[in-house]
Length: 136
Image (cartoon, rainbow, N blue to C red; front, side):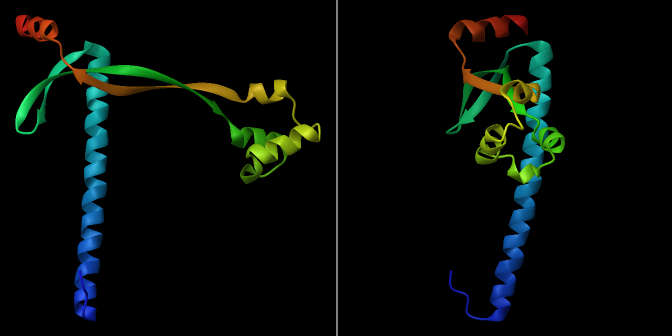
């Protein structure tokens, strides 16, 4: 796309900003819908849905999967050691250990597990499709 004058540049810029707003709104909508599906599947269990692929509805099972992630509370650790949070990277932590300001036991105190649920989808088996048809 060749821009030949300022008016065209202005038009292209405005179109670009409009597309960015649309993308942000679409992303928020997807996030809300995904969370609604996660909440539903957590209470109701695996669910049969139909996924539109190449103008054909493919039977798909959706369910939630719990993910546990071990995280480190860097802000509390930095505050207790009187260092900047930006210095709490691997080399910075190594320097604190070498200086004797941080031990493995102290480090472990700042670890915590965070649980999140994600939506998992897979192709539905014939038996599962029949089970859901019998429920309805």
